[in-house]
Length: 340
Image 1 (cartoon, rainbow, N blue to C red):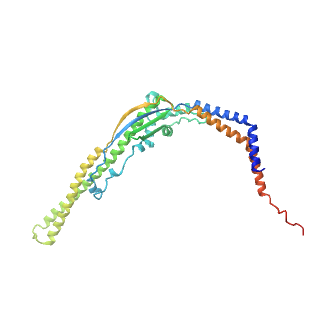
Image 2 (image 1 turned 60 degrees about the horizontal axis):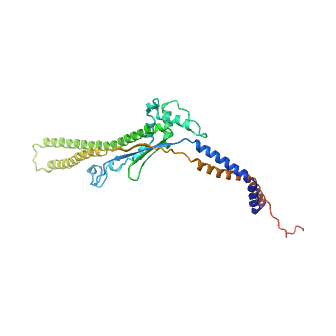
Image 3 (image 1 turned 30 degrees about the vertical axis):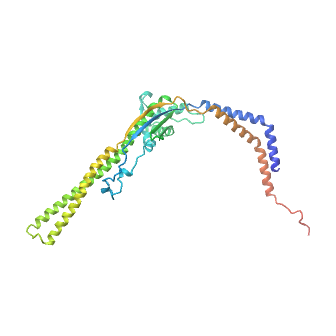
């Protein structure tokens, strides 16, 4: 059987079995239609949040006197905390699903989501058994809520938090929990970083004070031991001059560090973000649900292809087998003389 014969046989078989292929397509279309029709409706809620933080200073910070060169940046300038990453973190999800809701019999959000998943799950999805410990329930809730919410900045720079669920009554409570946990964790990270800078500068001021006191003690000791020594003697005047120079240098650093301490305290106030809800959570009236018509059309197309392949797979097998046998059979030369 060559290629032309194969194509002719395939077309003849498909034409002979076209009604069976059409019936298979209708069967698959009906299955896809029922799946889309019985799929649970997914509702969503969205809130717009405005995050206000102080703009970075254009002038060189006095903290650079301690941290390094004049054009260096302080750790507060270097480390930027992304509120999007905070919102997507496992810590935020765990804090949300561990909250108990009085409207649901004081159950945790994770328990409500597990029950809702089991009630609205599809035929092909396995049931989630309710874990016995709270930690396991929270761990399961963290996995369930991950694909159900999105946190991103829109084109105008505002933060949008969207949450989806098959339980419409669960949308608003969880949305406010997301806003509250994301805001609190974000503020904690920002203020913790600024507070660590302030504590660092305060420690530098204390260390300079300690060095200055040690210089004072050494000067007092030199003054007592050289009380009756002529002042023009270099071996006695030089140590005092060196100590005075070192003290003046450290005193200048101490004064700069004291100014930096005030600036670090100001930074601590500036780095505390202000997060306000601009658009209150609004539940969409149009549920997210797969289109039954589109699913039926896709199912009909897949069914026709599937049944067509099943009807011609025997021809394809025989053709491939014949080609392999012909390739493995050794060819003989008809002009070769086999007699002696």
